[in-house]
Image (cartoon, rainbow, N blue to C red; front, side, top):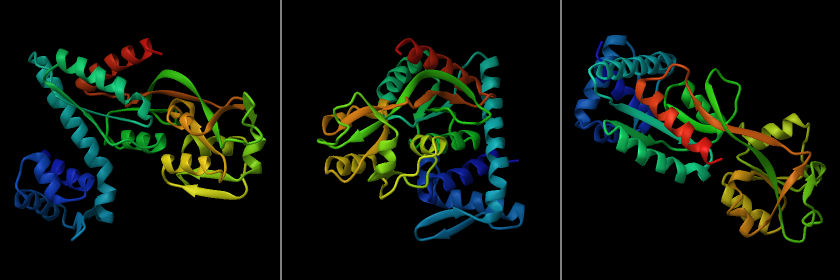
Length: 289
C-alpha cells in the first residue's frame, strides 16, 4: 500500500486544489494527479470531483476518508516510533485553537519546543469554533486543539473556567450593573454570532431554555461588536476573547454565571511527537493560568 498516494489525496481534499497540494508536498501537479488517478484505478471508482474551482471528494471517497485518515495517522505513529527507537525524534504536530487569546502563548511554547526537539515540526492550523475543531481532532485532521469541553472521546487537560459575557451598547439599561440577568437575552434584540453552529453561545441558550426574539445574524465577531456598538442589540462572547470588545462596548458577566471549561484536547492515542508537545503545552499554559 502506497501511503504517499493517500497523503496526496487527503491533502488535495483539505487544500481544495491539486496545485496547492503539489506545492506543499514538493511534487509537480501532474505527479499528484497521477497518484490520485492511480488510487481511483485501484479502488474502481472516482475519488475526486474536479472543476475549475478545485476538487472535492466524491460520495464514495467521503465514506473512505475516516479509514484513510486513520491509516495515515497510524503510518505517522509507526514512523515516529521507529525513529524514536533509533534515537531520533521527528514528526509533525498540528495544533489549532478556538480562542485567539492563546496564539501568543502557543507561539512561545512552539519556539521552546523546537529548540528542544529540532526534528519535530509544529504547525498552527486554521482556527474555528470548538465543536468544529473537536470534529477535526476525531477525523485526525489536527493533533491538538485548545477548545471548550465537548462530549467526545478525547483527552482533555483543563486550563481554565471561563465565563460567557454579554455585550451591551452604551446607554443600555443594564450597562450599569455588575452582572446582567439572563432574561435580558430574551427581551432582545439579540445578535446571534455564527448562526446554526454548535458554539458556546448557542449551547448556553439551549441549556437555559432561552429563545431570544427579534434576532439579528452575524458571521463575524468583529461585525457583531460593531452591531452592538451601533445599538442594534446585545450579544454573547467568551470572556477570554472580550479584550478588544471592551474598548467599544459594555462587557458584563451574566447572572447566574455561565461557565465554560477551556482546555487542551487531543486523541487518547498519540504519536510520540504529539505526546511530547501536549505535555510541554499543558505544563506551560497551566502554569500561567
